[in-house]
Length: 361
Image 1 (cartoon, rainbow, N blue to C red):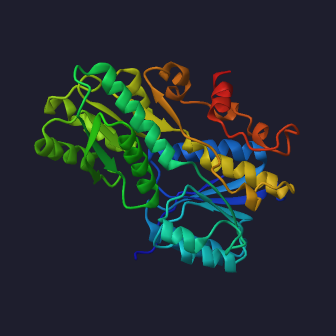
Image 2 (cartoon, one colour):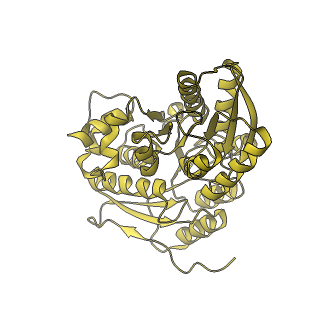
């Protein structure tokens, strides 16, 4: 593997006593979704008086492994590390952080069940793995599917025997769970038939090329469910040339609430997007803040989904207009989500509607 030459490094400066947290962003700068994860987390770190470093691993598991090795070898180590594990390197990374006695928090559940069983749950086999911030991807996948199915029935003259294509992201546990949500909804709504689920590798161009090929194979496709907006938008790029008009005879959606996807929903060029998980690193910081103050933020009994994803479509896009206008995340008071600062809270209320309310003020 080539040596790392450039790492994007962002730093908030705080007094020496401030907590030091390093976030290993799994993508690279320029990715709309993960850039927003950074922006929100930086705003949260400011409110929580946390010194916050961000390093980018460029979507590569081996680079992430190298970054973790670098962190462990530093003379001054962070107090906590936040990262999203990969199947091929998770066990090794967990082991090294455990040996270095660096507490760490993971984002999302991205690994397959067999590795998940090997890792256990936080604090079971790895005592320094304090917790995980994750949502129910299967439930979210089903939410997207049900919305696309409903929209197609409302707009198509024929509402039986409708063909569905699934564009998965990759072979990760995350994609598999989202796929399972699609399959679950198909089992419940017999008006729809699954033509095929293919792997779009989170790439816009790959998804659009696959769509063209799938139309040749199946002729008539009404619903395209994808694991990410970027892939659905790739299909939107070529839909008209293939005789398809979105929200008339083709209904598409994905995950992530990217700015382009939300703008397309507003302009009736896209059907729906599921998201809210760009808050995940910020939610991890809130829990770290509380844990450091002696709150049971990472109690083993509390190891459950941290929040749920939400859906945006034509029916509610106006409520989310602020997300289309470069939202000011500094307007959100992240202390309000802390158990240390809200004596009436007994459980975390990581609900995006509360965030939205503050952004709109």
